[in-house]
Image (cartoon, rainbow, N blue to C red; front, side, top):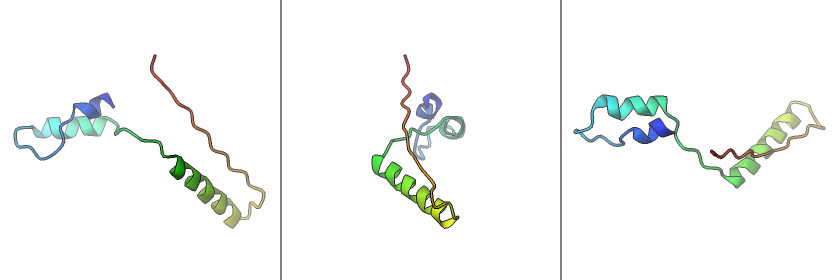
Length: 69
């Protein structure tokens, strides 16, 4: 995420091609957690298992939060 934040966004002509694109390709875009999307994904996985014939399939979700010290 550090390298991603170093990159400049937009099509500004004063920013070099290297600075604009290189750091975005080696860095990661920040990800936001959405509780509703997590629930929806769990339901979709349950439906997939049911369609494949796993009638007693169990899908559990968990969130592990990592923080820097």
